[in-house]
Length: 426
Image 1 (cartoon, rainbow, N blue to C red):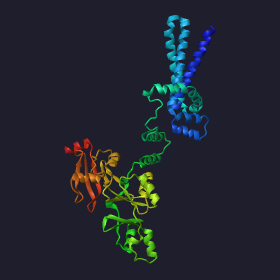
Image 2 (image 1 turned 90 degrees about the vertical axis):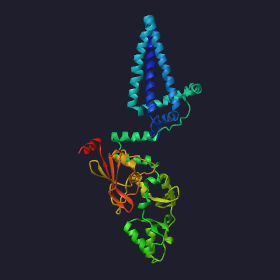
Image 3 (image 1 turned 120 degrees about the horizontal axis):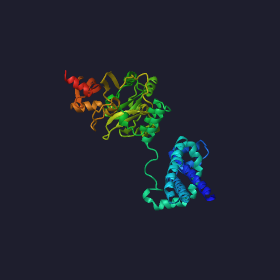
Image 4 (image 1 turned 120 degrees about the vertical axis):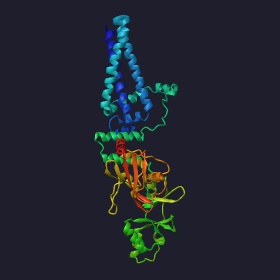
């Protein structure tokens, strides 16, 4: 009788320990290293042990698995021994069914559900105990790491602990839960994509850049600054590809105030900063800060001038458009009616596909919708009104505004399958 009571107590203790290890596994594994460091910085009790465990996730998992396996086997053995004494040979089947049900409900499912609902507080509570057990089990952990190399236990993983895609998923979840606003979500996405953006993606293209020749007079320079509203303008010598400096409006007015209008632009301009079009904008921002300049001249692989990037352009990638009194706020996509849009010809095809849910073709020979239109036409448009059919006639691109030989605005007419069929029957 006493043996049976003692056995029952041991069985109950085994179930309690099984519940402890199962719930500890969920609570500790679900806590990220970043969260553990945050709790440590907050000075929470148990955070030091939690941070130590998260530094070696393989040891943590092995410790929990060893403990859980031992107590589960102990529970099954004790229940079988008691059942054999009470029911004879048939007690093996009874003990098996009983142990399975009890372990599932009280040793696995129930504790894990509880741990998921209070993962932070529970993880802080159990972390010191698991850390202590990890030290006790260290010989077993060492043995497992040596005899089970195929499992990768004890080896450093080559994959990052947290990927950019996972961070984006957390941001999306925060937006859905209401803890992150739309503007905050956009900015966080911009920060993540900041290091992958190149100078070519944000530059003002060569055809849109206002330039001055180095033979321009001070009076003419003042007029150009006044008309454009720019504070800095690149200066070239003889041909546009030969950028020799950048002129600051403050230096021009300083020369005017000092009554030295006889100065040439070469004497007051400063040396340009050149960057390749493939340069990442985060590195470029650091370079501009080091040189204490606000504008960079972008060149291609042949050292030809292709555009400019300003500090404002770079910052706008993070915070959105920064408008001043000289900027004209005009959307790059204007909806005229259902399926009809006016597009800025400099918009990238990928951006249009994403925002309008289209499937315009992309190619290495062009990046913008204007480049797509020229590629399909086979020549530079001579006048507004020239058009191309894309996607089997489902999308029509029409030139509606040009500046010289440059396309400025394009009308995009997108038809769905039903619209196209109806228009063909009329």
